[in-house]
Amino acid sequence: MEYSTFGRHVAIDVWGVDFGLLNNADFLKNHMVEAAEACGATVLSVQAKQFEPQGATVLVMLSESHISIHTYPERGFAALDCYTCGETVDPQIAIDYMVSVLQPEKYYAKKLIRGVGEMEVATPEVNRNYVHA
Amino acid sequence: MEYSTFGRHVAIDVWGVDFGLLNNADFLKNHMVEAAEACGATVLSVQAKQFEPQGATVLVMLSESHISIHTYPERGFAALDCYTCGETVDPQIAIDYMVSVLQPEKYYAKKLIRGVGEMEVATPEVNRNYVHA
Image (tube, rainbow over all chains, first blue to last red; front, side):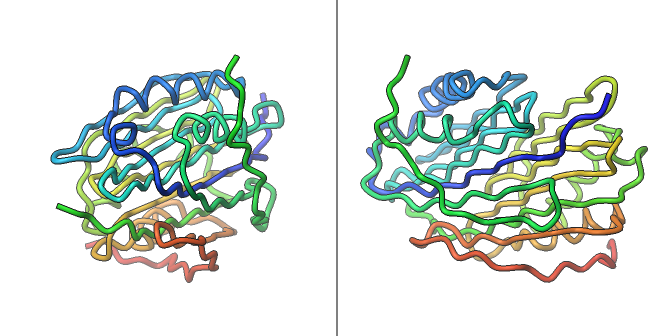
């Protein structure tokens, strides 16, 4: 069986996020699993790390690629990515889900189109008012 | 203690890679750990998944962010990322290490500068002749 190499990778830097939200690896992990499910992806496993004195990293392995977050609570900053392969799962939904949870004051995002030759880079539309089901 | 939010994220799609190299999660995992060490990063944990009938995903959590690979051996394709925070660790070294291991016929890469405001996107120099120590 051949799978499509086509994929979409959304990378977003979020700023002005509440310290407590960014400094809670379990909270982030739980929401990232929900974000994955919201966009129709299948979670295979999760690595989560709470750093001292602050900071968290969560890496969610999907059947369709991955979701990652790295946080700097003392700066109100997090770097969040969702990369999904195939046509059926849209990583922007997972990103919108997480943005709606984190409610950053500002964000900067890029979307890479991968697996089709030269990578196309676009600036995606982010919906910070994603409505949770 | 405050950490720098500055980071560099290299995303590379490689094509024309040997099926056997891409279809071996353990082989990829071992080399990704070495690639992380080569660029001076610290490996915290690893998730590796061998898919059936073929394909692999490896996610390496670093103190300084992450390295990921998703492979489509039947297409000779892999999507590889290395994102590292701070000034001291250069993700391009880990990417060059992996490219020298995989020896793709073609590749397409982008580098995102993150954690400083608007993301800058560049096309990085890739060295496929990285010399292993």
